[in-house]
Image: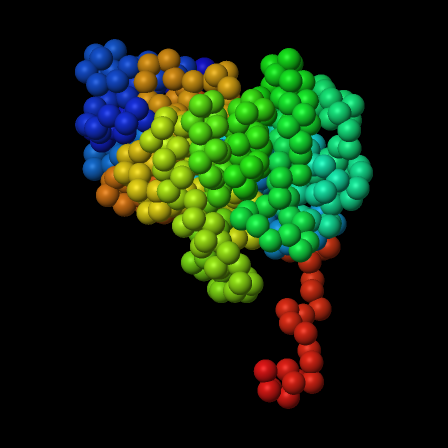
Length: 443
């Protein structure tokens, strides 16, 4: 049992979208039991009081697109060929605590290397590791055409986070295998990168029959399906095939927009990676050409994503944390800023996308994302008003309290110092070609 806690005097953003107001929040046995005057009345004397004067009390953030097992690679080469299973699990546990210390109380880790996702989820639930609540997938399903890693993907078998399936029988068998091993989601890379193909977004590499084989098999066993879709065609097909969540959904056309609006399939655009590279890629040596590509993806997709939102399609916030451009603990808040700046959502609407809408990652199994009676007490207390400045949600110095299931997370205990691990990171010979002209300083 956890202690009885009354958070009082704080400005409460409850996740419903209603105007904030100063009121109390009562937590008992890990659950929110009352708010406002009712909370004050029921609190009694045997209660720990947390004074939140001048602060904002709100649900913990929910990151609907986080790769907890990747450990911030700078390339797919590093991710696919420089990872070991046991060490991947240990580093994932280390990074999970970083995520929690940033005020993120739930994540969707839709695909993982090896089987780290389900194992880490179970370790956290069993008290063996400290981290956010997790909904997890296994290896992402890819066809042999490949996914976002292109020709690094083999024609069969597994590499990194990818499991290649080549027929309906293999699709059905792999979905069943993953469910047997405890996944909460099945992920499909509906699109991929193919050399010499020039188009808006990526190429759709699954047929409708193949997509329906995934959803039919998974749904028959009570498991939802999420798809990586970065084109109009893939977004349309995933929605029509019965997917339960679409990641990205960029470059939508009218047909794709109509499909997601008709089905109500939620979308996690996950534009933070693109926005980070676009704004600061030059500081980490990213390819300058990618800045324009990602700017076009954001600016070219903002209008249709906003139209989807206005049509009632739920938008979830995801950070794609787990890569060198989106390290753990730093950028989980930024999708809200992107939604506000590019999609025109109000700060309150953006916060709801990062809290209440995120409950969908648990497929109704957990009541999270709101401050309301009977909801799990996943609560953060922030020094300041995120409705005036969303960026304070990314400022660790402004994070006063984090409660996960009513248990307060120790924010004062430092993360153990991490040192380099032999063979874990790539050690390139050079970042450019040493031609004679370069050596002579002529280019």
